[in-house]
Every structure is written in structure tokens, then in C-alpha cells.
Image 1 (cartoon, rainbow, N blue to C red):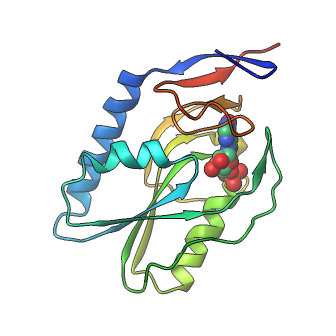
Image 2: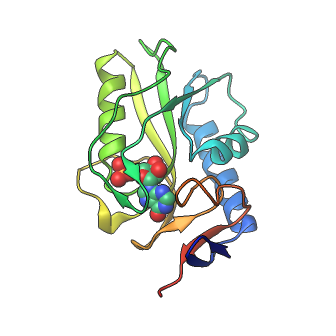
Length: 176
Ligand code: IMP
């Protein structure tokens, strides 16, 4: 696949993705039995992950989205911007954050901190992808879909310069 000047190859296909998402949801159904967690997706990248995940969640639960961005183009800027759309009351709620990818971990560190400050009973993270070698902070990540190398990825919600979100597979940048 080509996006602008870059070429990408399939890294994780639709079937592998969907299998993994179903198994994470199954685990969440088990771990949160009898509870009513609030799922919070991080826009824009998580929209497909959230949609597919929620089809398997059997719990009485709410879904909401927030937006923030520390990323422009292909490298993390490292600076955290404000949360937008956090109007759902998280006080005394069990929060499960649904994220597309964790790179430096700075975004997730600040989001979890914010929810804890707002009095959430518990805050856990479910991420579709994790780049363990890029992590800059200590993060307790309860649910991880796939651990991947540091190479840039697109597809299934993830973008390169705003493009490439609308695919069923996840693609990795081909070395030039
Ligand atoms: P972090 O704060 O460095 O963990 O950045 C997380 C955010 O960076 C994600 O929500 C993505 O929006 C973006 N990101 C990190 N790595 C990639 C990538 O390989 N492709 C597309 N977006 C990425």
C-alpha cells in the first residue's frame, strides 16, 4: 500500500486482529463480571478498535470518547495537549481506556493520571498495539493486543498524516 511518499506492507491482518480483539473482550468480560465499567476511547485512532471491541463486550457498560494529540506526522512531539470531551463523570467509575497504540506512553500516563485525579475507582488500559522499546514512562497496561517493533504503522484507525485509517489490516512502513 502506498500513502503519499511512503510504502507500507501488511503487519497484522484482519483475521489476527479480530481474533485478538475478541479474546481481550472475553478477558474483560471475565475480569469485570458484575461491574459496569465505562469504556473511554481515545480519538481518532481508536475508533475501529472501540467499535469491534464493544461488539464482544457483554457487560452493562457505557462508551465514551475523548480526544487529545501529542503526535504530528511521524514522530512523537512528546508534548501532551489537553483532553477534549471529557464530560462523562468518571467519579467512582471503573474506567477502561481503549487506545490504538502506545508509543512513548506519555499520552496514556497523562490520561490515566487525569482520571485518577477526577476520582475514578479504577483505571485500566487496553491497547491494540504496544511499542515496548519506545516506552519512556512506567505504565501498567492490563490488556495488550500486539507488541510490535518501533517502525511506523498505519491502518485500522491509525494514520499517516491523516490518511490510511480506513483499512481492515494494519500496515508497517517499508524501509526505503
Ligand atoms: P505516545 O504518547 O507516544 O504513546 O503516543 C501515542 C499516540 O501516538 C497514539 O495514540 C497514536 O496516535 C500516535 N502513534 C504512535 N505511534 C504511531 C504509529 O506508528 N502510527 C500512527 N500513529 C502512531
